[in-house]
Length: 471
Ligand code: GCO
Image (tube, rainbow, N blue to C red; front, side):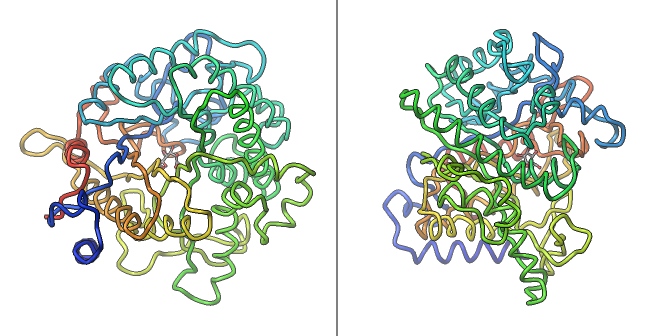
């Protein structure tokens, strides 16, 4: 019901808008601007497997997933999707769908098994092969330097709670870019620092499993510092690289729109969204968190964090609805989405218009930087239909409605340049193990056979059209 209404609204405003010739062609389709970049995102620990291969050191996620009770069913990333060995097949899948960009992450412990010190050339060789394979297939590599698999050796030295990590990360970034930077021109620093801080260092439900408000805030600040130090170092290399980072941005609303929930929503917004945006774009700590950050921030920190970036990646899944909760990390907690909002398989609200809102806010408050939607997707169950095909119609609707929401923002002046679906393969979904499926492609957990789902074919069609059919 809601989806139909949304589609109708998109179609109506499309007809009425002042459009360039490329967008105006077909009344039954929404077309993206020429050059819109289409691709997908993955991350190392979630798909690579081969955690003991070729000198890789242990990561915090190896430790965490082997700790009883931390990950559903005791699942680990030991095998994951065996992408370490099967990457040529995965690159071929992307190429067949017409994807032109691929955001993957580099596993820090493959490159530097101890986090600092000696470089493991064999670990870098893997990314070297992958980059060459991507380029040969006409796909632009978008390596992300950190998607959560911190070397355990660094965790043993305090990890993200130790401010020295800024230097460790900048050194590691230079090692990777030094090896791949003759062919890779686009670099992503971090993936979702607020999620790492909140779940890994506040609530303890992700690695390394730390709890408490102070460690959460320390992880926020030190990731910002590390990001700034790495951006500065890569910029200083003078290689003309295109540099950016990825934040999870989810507009926060008071549950029920109630006045009584407004303060909780504002505080959670500061923790989840503003803690990354405000220091990076404005060189300031969000007002509501000033007291939390005060003991951590030293002279020069905010100047280091406020680096110019060439693009911002945003990961969008839904809005967040907050209310006071005395047991919550910041005294706030999740509440229900407005009535009638659908949910994905894992219960996340489906709110595509929140993406339009988020993109327009970046235009209003953060100078409208070039933005790529670096993650959007959903967990839904899929099944084998009567014709023997993997069917996942709900995922198609989910992706389509979010694309339309992104397009609506472009029409209103948002600077959205490309789209990366989360994700290519059903994979290791952190504390939920393999119980969740976000992939465009099924992965048989026994045989590792890849089977494209209906959504894969649908996405390939959208890429071909550079747009979405409304009919
Ligand atoms: C995140 C990560 C991904 C997740 C995806 C689905 O946003 O949590 O970047 O690694 O798997 O978002 O939860």
